[in-house]
Length: 425
Image 1 (cartoon, one colour):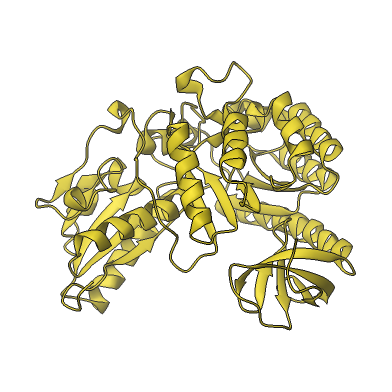
Image 2: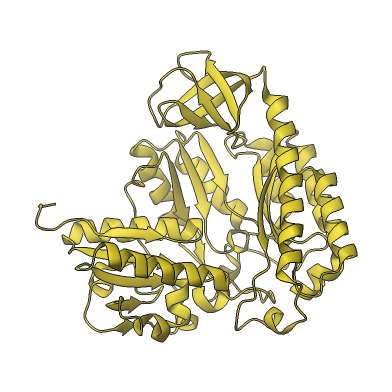
């Protein structure tokens, strides 16, 4: 790339799927010999996410007044006119159009199509993820659920699977470029293949993807999954968890709550007994399994007793990695029209949930002290265990490699350790 065509600055807000798509945009723009532009890949999961996007746009324009600012992502998809009306914005591009340099950098104020008419996923292969040792691979787009708090189906469109051969080729390519860990990601990955007839009422085609990826990339050391819908995990999934050591025993569950009334009002497809059974089955399959969970605190109509039930269940299940969000009303969702819980109450509840997660994670880290674990190095002195625990090691090691580390203690970040062998098996 010549000096006269500097790389665009890509600002990624929101989820792992946005992270992947930002890298696709970077790859496409690099091949196209990009102009001096700033791309803001927005999130719309809450009103606060939109506010942060607008704040980011204004700040970037102040810092680089001559740069062309292009806004894309979920918030842009939902309300392109609002962003196009900002004086700082030169162009607004929808989710279906953003992965092509030609459409991303084209002329005109707005290029946003009807996402509900899109039936394909992008066919891009990314040679690697800039600055990362962990690579994300998109296996599906969109969502067919109708959760009362969520606007994402309107921003991402219907559930649609990426072709299986495309997924396996992409993973093989990433492994060939040195990635030891791949994360399968999407909007609702456990629903993979529903549009292709690969899964039944309660089953998932995700297990087919996992098996094919591991078979196609025998050198891949770690396969990790992004957020999972608990209602979609079938018998085959737990058999895979038990039998495939390269499938990381780190399950991040889209729970949102752990009280049946709240789950009903959210229009989630699982209940507390389902979560309990899932946790028990996963631990029977892999005793070393750890769990993450997405949780909303202060959902509309959530009483003190309902929240107490959620908190008690989260403590009982000993979930280690919690992503907790105080409820934020999202215009366009039915939950925004329900009786709201005061914001300060939601924040207090969120703090309590985070405390439960912190305590569970601290117990997990303490259990690892004194053991030897394979650690994937993300930086010369920093990496993660298979259970996703952060480790600072005293010896330098090449980022991207997996080394055995004796874990000697904990610090404010996670674990501390020292090299045990030259390399992991």
